Image (cartoon, rainbow, N blue to C red; front, side, top):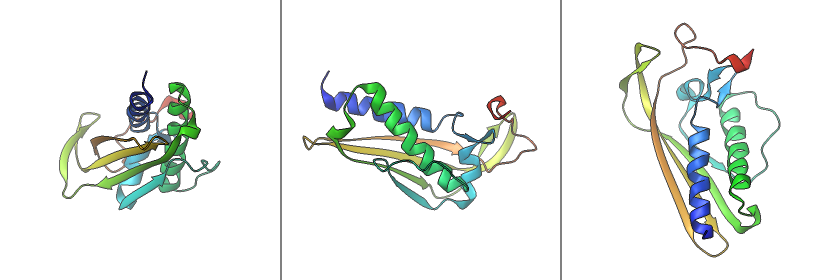
Length: 147
């Protein structure tokens, strides 16, 4: 399979796992915790992931780097072939209503853009946006993984 297609697949897998419910802090979805503190966040995915995180932003950076390198490893593409990889998270303007566990919540859309380039000069990007409501432990379900 061509390296470009492999890298694009790794980027898609990365965003899929990164934005999933499995990105949690103490059982609560990371992006609900991050929403109120978020401006624009840019993460160099090729830097080593820190081993500890204290704030939602630090968790977001740590998870991004871990999950990206995990997806690249699963793809079989040597990480040395990737010369640049970045994740940008932007809070889109405005607010909107969405449902969280059967409750209507006011939140915002976050746009996730993962970009990477190979040593051949080819570059790829994958985008995803999703509704995120601010964290509210009164109505959110805590993941059983936290126990």
